[in-house]
Length: 299
Image (tube, rainbow, N blue to C red; front, side, top):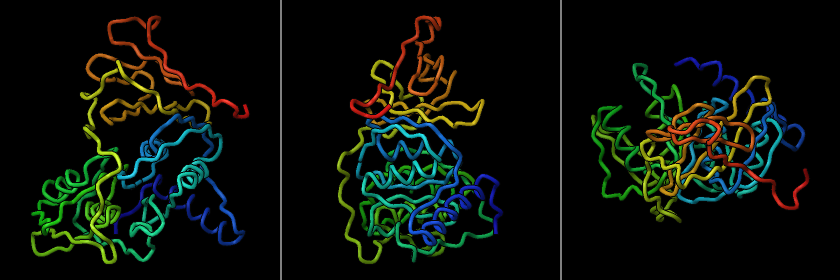
């Protein structure tokens, strides 16, 4: 059995404390580090992805429905996740080292969904995608990483997924990605065969189909950038991460000095604000993107 990393132990511990507190006191208690977060019309899956990246969570969510979040938060990071999830009529659970987010009644949320046991010699992997095609991700997992053949069994394999995962079993990740969209798999020799989970109909087409699921800075175009959020640990000396969105449904998570596309880079990232230059300008001519206050909200 593979040992958990320190960050994974912390994640499991924090959420275990939350669930025990809820069971004992009828309300959730939280133990994560305090954070300051600001989101403006950010897709929930992208917002949870940047939080997961910052805190070391392994995170899986279907991206077929595309709710958005606007809000300012100053709390422990696990409390903020709980608020974001609840405000969009979603739920979450922890399985192994994964935070799984979805809607009530989805198979992914069923605690009886036991995770597959990975072979001892299976190498762990990392995956980091936002609103990516389920079919593309599953094909890569099966054919490239597991070196097996994929049998769709006549299924269209619809859906999109958002994933932040590190040091995880490819088979476990494959199971969770499929379950998030109503599918399951069986192994037959060197073949992975897909099927529909019991009690689930064929997944419907997404509410909004992404035009492009690019996961590279080659897709970035700063002429139409939107600052959707900033995430900052309250620990002294910590860096702020900004969530940027582009018209092609591509998201970037950047810190100060990070490249954006081939020429642009961020000059400075701080709570509520990002400064970006096109690569030929000096910092004094950088374009500044700000997150304004919410009208009527308390300061």
